[in-house]
Image (cartoon, rainbow, N blue to C red; front, side, top):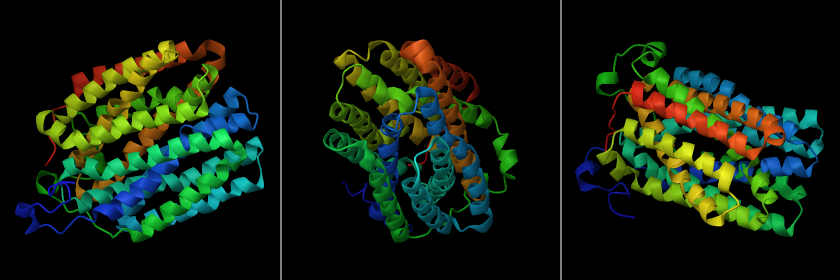
Length: 399
């Protein structure tokens, strides 16, 4: 890691406290390791329990639906109380406790309850932690990716490790793996120091959350967030089952998931340089266009290994660039007292889109097939690209 990356730049050291890089990074490592254990394998586990595609889509959609509600509630509470780190710690502990209920039953109703309860607390955590991280970065938004990339590393380690594990052992061990990772999130949250965002420049006195939300391009951005996550619905819900049906082994599928996140890590490492040359709007536009291409490839040509590898590499744009640009846009659009609500709305609209994507893909997968289901995803991403190109103003990040 360079001196600049480690936060010891001589020019800034005189007036900025050091960034707790490894403490922040450890939390992202465990948090996204949990995502790496659910996104590729949750639907596979429900399939292992004998549920049909429609029920699988519904169970996967429940946590995403909770993401529509929980972040806004916790975001409002975090902004009002200022106790964001306490919310993170309690949310992590409650996630572990409520998910542990899965050991007491496997019926559809019981699993639906477990999915709803643990997601209500899990989705309280990340938006508040994003505000804490950005506060530690002292406005250097472009450096966010250097911390966040450890989340991607956690995702990679999990998908590869669990992919191999499930080739050797039954999927019955899956809940144990999730509980272990959740315990890691709790431990990491206790290691993180607190920080509060500071009002800066033009955002100071800019009015309340609703007034800032009505600023030009902000609502259009949030609509596009929902569309992007809707387009990811078939990917997160059925990609593993899709590739298994095409003859890929679980170990190979885990590696393919990991490949996408390796590409994501590499793009995170380059985001500072990308933001130095391109605006947030330009980065978002390219992300949506490449998402539209990616879903077409997965829906039509996933049986071709070379095409599948290329489609997974595009995860660098469809998640990496998109997420980094979205975080930068939210921070630039809201003042310090509204940061929690701005990040929470980002999470909530992501959950809304993701839930709709999981639901429609669950109902269309068996009836209309992968080609149509991924085609709808491509259309959603393309619609978002049009909105970004016509409605969003050019925004630059701070370095």
